[in-house]
Image 1 (spheres, rainbow, N blue to C red):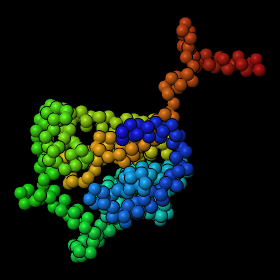
Image 2 (cartoon, one colour):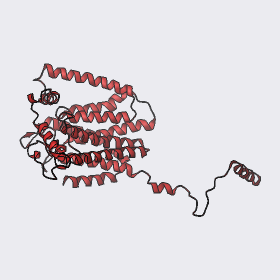
Image 3 (tube, one colour):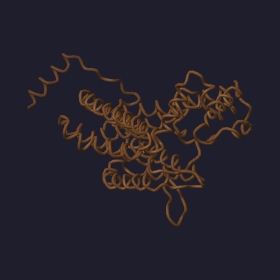
Image 4 (cartoon, rainbow, N blue to C red):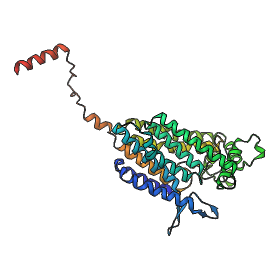
Length: 364
């Protein structure tokens, strides 16, 4: 059902001209921020578990994750800001960009991080990547990196000095980092990663077969955060490489189409909406094979969860809207005059051109 609705979102978004999205970006940006604040202050509990990342829609009893919407809306805003600068060819002003560019980013990240550190960090990373690709001066990026480093150091110092004064999520972050960096794995609780390793090792080359996973009965979040481990168990190393190939193919399509787009806003939209999908996919797979600490990031279009699927499909629909306005090859060929079937191509020499000019001059 989620995928079916997502495909409908792909169709709708692809039929909207991406230039018209500028009219709704500035309306949706504050709306999504308000939803993030409401979610952060809500202390929601769903099925007896803490659900501080989700918000429940009244009356229809449907939950969704506003932080997933933040990826799309914030990156669209950044793309539009950078595109305006590129089209006007005006240099960046650092102080002005702090207000118009970095303040919205800081506000979104600051609201998301207390409940979901990995999503906040991933959002900031994709924002910085988009800003870099958008031509923002590197010296200004270094200034922002310095400011961010100082804030992070202060936050770590406060967490160390006043551990009881900060939200409980800080202790969760600390525990995950300690588990990931521990030298003696026997001294820490690695229940999730151990079961993920068992699933991957059991899959071997060709896997146990579709639906024959055993570890999904023991591995928490086996249908979302650790779905890649279950895929390897059922489809083996062959299935894992096939899945990686699909995401890489999608990544290369994004790059190829961004090169073809001549409009700055369209090109940056492909960067801002397409690259986060690929980054999120490899973070999820990296967690399953212990390249990264546990983050809670879904595998796009595969992990369970309606919000992730719908937002990803909407992003792909916007990208299709950009690529749909590229001039098709046949239309370009029609504009080029070709010689008739029996007509030889005429390449005049310099002497023939000079003679033609003299004849035209005499006739005049």
